[in-house]
Image (tube, rainbow, N blue to C red; front, side, top):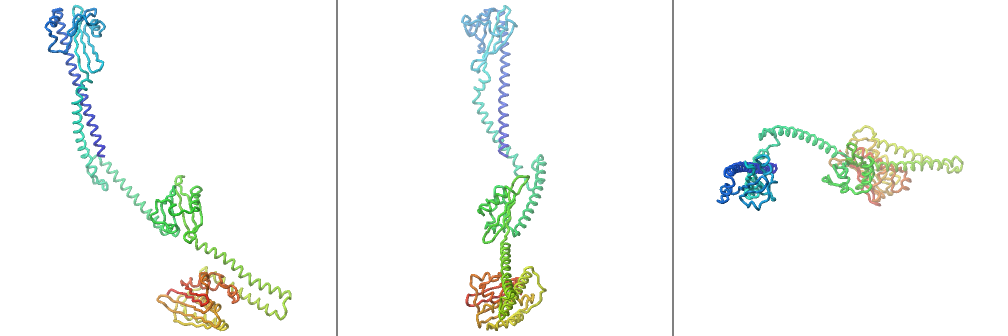
Length: 558
């Protein structure tokens, strides 16, 4: 602003200076020109009077004395006859001069009595002023003088004018610099944070008032915007779903922590191209589809987990401004869907096998194809398969109840007493295989469902007996460890191969299917154990080595 004011003042000063020079020179030129014209007329009248009184002798007298207007050496007198012939000239011989009848001032003098004219040189640097007057005898006396034109004066005065102009410009520049700083100094010291407290110029009061109002409006808008931004960040930062906002060029406008974790991005990736955090072709095609058609979706895997990506087009006033991408972690959902499919297939298979056995045996008996002595065996097979079928259905119903969270009211349950009851219920099975079952530890009580806890320990012990070796052992211990109660079932059985240990709590999973069916297992016992433990907030720990036995610990929080 200082430079602009400086230039303005300097230009005004220069313009004023130039205008003054032009005006002064014009006025002086006009003044001296008019003075000279008056003198020229006076000289002509004197000369005319002399000629009329003395005749040609007056002019000859001037010529003989070589007077030639010594007091005004630039004057020239010419005497012209009525036919235009030059009778006398103070600067040249009359015989050598051409006829002057066609000269403007001479012609008009003959017509009007007096006349004047001006003629310029070819270079326009000089002009000649003529005055002519008719004498009593009909002749014309003309006087002339040469004058420098304005252009000539300018050329002559150019050097001093330039010197004066340069000095004036330097002084004007210094003055303009001082004035511009003086004008701007109060403006530079304005406190725009408190506009109404300034007293620089009265003329600025409306502007400062307007600035104050604008600052208040901007502050309110910024506060509202910050509040909305904070609320948006607060909401998105606690979202389980990943959220990414992209502009119409594919630049990241916003990304929440969940999305950063999905794509392995840094928090400082705002403003970067989406390609910097993900280069998968399928996802970019889905984003392009959403930009063109309004919506796109894709399911793909990231970091070992499965995600559903939903992308939608964002418009403002019917113009495409960007896209919003939501990432849903559907790993558990996909796993549950897979488990349901497997469960359905397994249930169908598990129900079909005993039903086929029962149907086959019944058909043989019905058609009399069984020997009388074998009838009891076939009837026993039907009873065994029916009992297995009932057990399977009961386990399925029990699992469904656990999945739905349906359970009796909780009560205080002594885990040691429950373990003893479960071991006692399996006494006959253990005796048949020569398995020694022992229960030890301390009395620890928890809040839970007694029947569920009994079934959990019963299933663990039942598995330990079924998959044990002849004359093996099963040890059940109940201990308190700080704020935890631990129930451990340890056997000396066949153990579980390492590659199957992560799946033994899945429904219908069997390491050795032939051995499981021979022992009457349904494949749901350990799955029920897992669900009961989850219901009580407990965790299960498994230690097993193939051929050396298995140890299962259930840890309850107290």
